[in-house]
Amino acid sequence: MAIDKWWSKGVSKRGGRARPVAAAVIAGAVLAAVPAAAAGTSNPASARSGPSVTSEPWGSTAEGPVQRWTLNNGHGLRVKILTYGGILQSVETPDRHGRRANITLGFDNLADYVAKSPYFGCITGRYANRIALGRFSLDGKQYQLPINNDPNSLHGGTVGFDKHIWATTPFTRAGQVGLVMRFTSPDGDQGYPGKLSSVVTYTLTKGNGIRMDYRATTDAPTIVNLTNHAYWNLAGEGSGTIENHRLTIKASKYTPVDPTLIPTGAIDPVGGTPMDFRRSTAIGDRIRDGFAQLVIGRGYDHNWVLDRHGSGLQVAAKVTEPRSGRQLTVLTTEPGLQFYSGNFLDGTLVGTSGRMYRQGDGLALETQHFPDSPNHSNFPSTVLRPNQTYRTTTVYQFGSQG
Image 1 (spheres, one colour):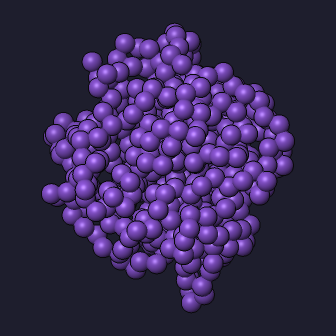
Image 2 (cartoon, rainbow, N blue to C red; image 1 turned 180 degrees about the vertical axis):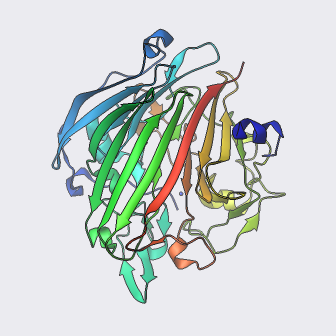
Image 3 (tube, rainbow, N blue to C red; image 1 turned 135 degrees about the horizontal axis):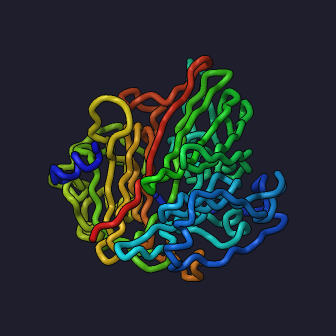
């Protein structure tokens, strides 16, 4: 298999994140919220009873009722997804001993997601990551987006795709279960041109993967960059730091940033710097180095230029947590990967397990086109035009090592 072949070679190989928008200004302000039980270590047998998809009410917003879907692939993987923002609210996977635990950061209630989530587990769009000063030009016309990460626009603006309810349809086919989620962003939404119709399909594979297929079409020229913003801790959500996690990124170059975390336009080699994860390296080994880029981001919050050969799904990164043995392999069709080391988690958020999240308690691996691409002609284009279809796929593949 291609994944094993690449890894067997032993290849060596956010300013801050936006402050949460006040609930009062979010179109989907919570009217009611239903708490969920904290997800801790659970009985592996309960996830091996065969593929299933169920749903339950999980509160409501001004847009309507929110559902929480529970997907079980029957092979040890159980995932809970909210129709609000397409959020991965819980991802339970087995460790080397078969014991399952929730490994993604999040909340046990809808109100916290609406009021103060730093994009936990959500679909980000219409444009994931930052756009400098919230401005870009397309076909000779300039567009202005909301400034929600001063002085820039982040993850689609003040009310991005993560703050809407997605129309959701479950499916079961060929022993796999999943959800088809749809959201239409009108022309002018958050300043973006064109009506964008987006479809995100989550599929739990038999091999314990979460496959995410993104599709979008537009009725006028626009820009689009969709991803998922899950935060991971393979030792278990709320268990502490991810600095012992060993990370490999299949990238020999990255895009350095200015003091506001906007790419300078340069594409620099990682060699000889703390940005080099071509060999498996503990995240904490160099995170406190005085390297200028780490000082700017207060850690890692950068885009890596993936070493791709041809098209299709290819391995981008791999994370291993030594104590539990859990592994996460990220495959994608995208040209870039944003690695964020949870630098702005500050102890003010209490997660699903009832434990607070402090700096470095989770990591994000966001597959993407590059940040601020519309303002850099040397970056891969993010322009989508009528009669074109935006297509991208990412897989979070889970496993364990003995």
